[in-house]
Image 1: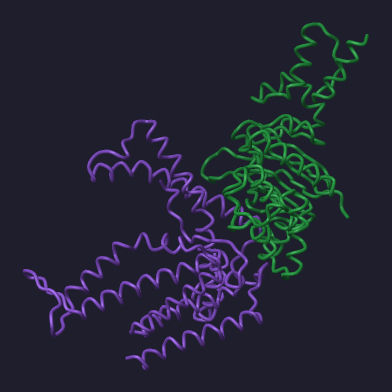
Image 2 (image 1 turned 180 degrees about the vertical axis):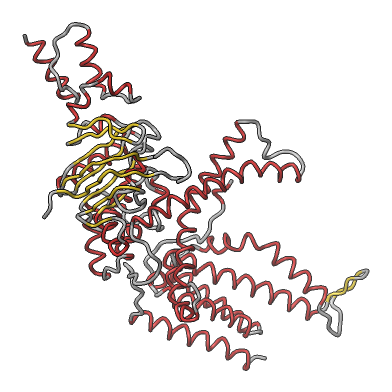
Amino acid sequence: MLRDITIGQHFPGNSILHRCDPRLKLVGTIAYIVVLFVAANPVGIALSIALLALLYSVAKIPFKMILKSLKPIVPVIIFTAVLNLFFLTGETPLFQWWIFTIYPEGVRYAILMAVRVMALIAGTSLLTYTTSPIVLTDAIENLLRPLGKLHFPVHELAMMMTIALRFIPTLIDETEKIMNAQKARGAMLDTGSFVQRVKALVPILIPLFLSAFRRADELAMAMECRCYHGGEGRTRLKVLKFGREDVLCAAALTVLLGIIVCTRFLFA
Amino acid sequence: MKDTMIDVQDVKFRYDPEQPGYAVDGVSMQVRRGEFVAVLGANGCGKSTLAKHFNAILLPEKGTVLVEDMDTRTEDHLYDIRQKVGMVFQNPDNQIVATIVEEDVAFALENLGVPAPEIRERIDESMKLAGIYEQKDKAPHKLSGGQKQRVAIAGVIAMRPDCLVLDEATAMLDPRGRRQVMKTIRQLREAGISIVAITHYMEEAAQADRVLVMSRGRIVMEGTPEQVFSQTERLHSYHLDVPQAAELRDELVKAGIPMPQNVITPEACAEALYALLAQ
């Protein structure tokens, strides 16, 4: 049951997208999201999707992975689409029944919005598919570094993210063990009313919390033994390098996103 | 170079200064360069507490701990001491920091500010020594217990310590994992690193150069494994077992079979029995 939760699903590979500097990918993803909202016309959205399809095929990520990433947000998309469908008013109604009136503008906007949200999710998924969480953490640390001058704890934040990522599988295993132990003692985790089921979680969470604190204590000691003393004077095994390939990718992405933005003015 | 790595002089330590009982109650001992020392003792006898004094995780209340002549209480030497005396703990899951094996092995060197190309060189060397080089790109949670513990060992020996302290490092492993870790330890000894192993497994202690037995915060027995493990009765009084081979020897002697002294390994036991059968 808990195994289904995948955080930061990484799809290893050796395409140019996989090799690309994670900082570029992170900034590129943010730029793509912005462009999706700036290019508010069907041509722009169509081009954005074409770009996404191109990137997915370059990265050799199977098409079904897109569907997998979209699956959890289908209810949200349907909900917003329905709202847009009914609440946007135009001049000539397309369809009228009881208190419901649908205008062509509503249909158009609902479809556009749904497609846009789907492209957004697929775009950000591409980032996590092609970038391992640890590399992504490095990129975030690197991009946030200027904030360190304002006494923002950049290194500490990155270290916390790394440790969190490291301990997710460990704690999931532990939760399963505790659940089995409680079931063996007659805990009813899957039956009863909602309130009963929530109450049944308490004897799982308390041991989990206690064990997490114990682990944290031991980990802190092990880190001390390995001379950890914060981010000061620390070097890294893998230094992020912005190579020629990255410059090329950045240029290509800028041009393509630029074209998409232009459609806003050409087809408005 | 000095022969004594770690010099512990009359150390006393208690976790709660308001309690009269000491966890470590007046211990003096030395670890020599290249030596393999095993520390035995029942639960709560203070052996882990003592081990934490070796690299300044705990500081003695009375007495001194010198690591290559550096007092663990001087703060200037803290990172020198921790780099010289590496420590591996019981639970491999709780000492791995990073999400990729090689990143974790590099952790200590990153902390010490070693330049990137040198980190690469040193972690490759230590991963090969610990026998986990093939796993370097894997996620730690995908490894077996023995492999994880060897990742932890590699992460420590990347600092090039002179001494490695293993605090019940094999206690949570299955027999196969324990064998793998023991093999790694033998390789480290050949590389000239001193080993202090705190353990419950008599078979591990039988491979040591010297065995210390602790009880109630004090060292109560000391000697070569042969000397210590031939005193079966006394070890039992400290709630400890002896290696199976020594136990068998004792039973055979009791049954009137003239087994020689100092039989503590299965090989030695087998040899003694062959000799007896040949007569």
